[in-house]
Image 1: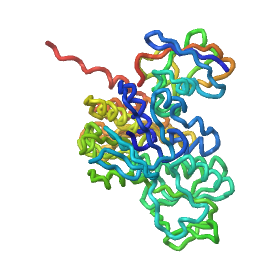
Image 2: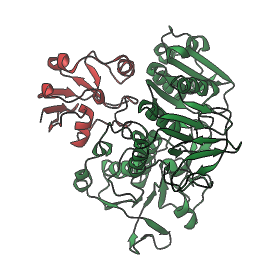
Image 3: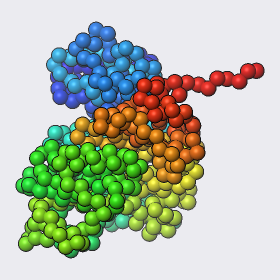
Image 4: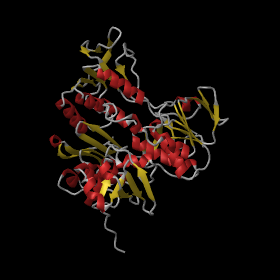
Length: 106
Length: 407
């Protein structure tokens, strides 16, 4: 299974085995990574699964769609590498993906 | 002790641990699956596009790792407030120091002839969704009773699956209890364009069939032939336990702004709880996932001795066809409605105001209006109506901090 590393604000790293086909949000929730609330359960409705994708992975994770981009625009401290993790699908190509968590969600 | 392992109950259990509570936590659930999210039951899960395990709110071992005793298939029969114990259907009595009631709001049943025929479904649980999917698989025509969110979402799913869909709605418009007329009109048009026969001011008399559903019969006498029917005419808070225990019940379990009932050892949260809205200055009962999560968080904090007032801005979402609705606030009592964008473009928002103050926003494929609106609602702001109406105006600028007064 592809490995994904989630890095909290305080530097704590969580390396998880992520099942292909799940979202990066679901992989975090299943592995009890703190800091990803995902209140809406992955419907791209709440913006509480915000992550910063490591620059080296931006090409492979792709760009957000218009809806997601608008949501991110209002997120806490959005950056050019911001994504909603419920909208990134886990694939073999993402083995090694690194994402960082913001200080707050919402 | 938490009665109800839905979105609110599961959140409260997790939040109690996050708040540092080190005592025993028991989470009682009537159903057998671990706590799960219900919204996909009328959408992706119903259509077979999401497997059951993806509904689970947390992995199964989350509960064990956090020392949360998850008791599934366990029905609470009675709360003994004097003895501080909950009696289960099995006869077992479980003692509690503090209790959270999170029993939710099951669908209202309708007492019409034929409502128990095979082919007539209700929708609340995974089991219900599985049963409805099986019924739909063998059906060509579906009748939906009630044009609320669940009815409209299932209509969208069934149309995608190629079924003929008729919706019967008693009120003069769809979503009449939860949306303003402009939003009702938007979804009415959306469903009509998708080929749904959406009939307003139409009353159901009953269902007919020889051993299995064959038709819905209207009060006009007309028969609408169908092999499947879904009854979704709203939900009623599950308050029996609270009532029997002598707790105050008024359209839900009565709680104060800290989610506490009149009994200082008992709290309630989620769909079953009737609480004072700090934002609107009146009592409300909300049926939504965000309310369940946020009220449960407040209840959990207060159960550990803190004092947290629950004052989150209500919000909600729905997915139908290619439209995502996001709504924030409660529009009841509005005296002005401002539309933004063209409904035909399917990117459209409606702002409801009262004496200039923004009460609510309903945003269709317009998350910027939703999020900006949600923040403005929380601020009790009175935004410039011209800017709200102008799709080119940047709503973010409305959120900019007001200029500070000169010292």
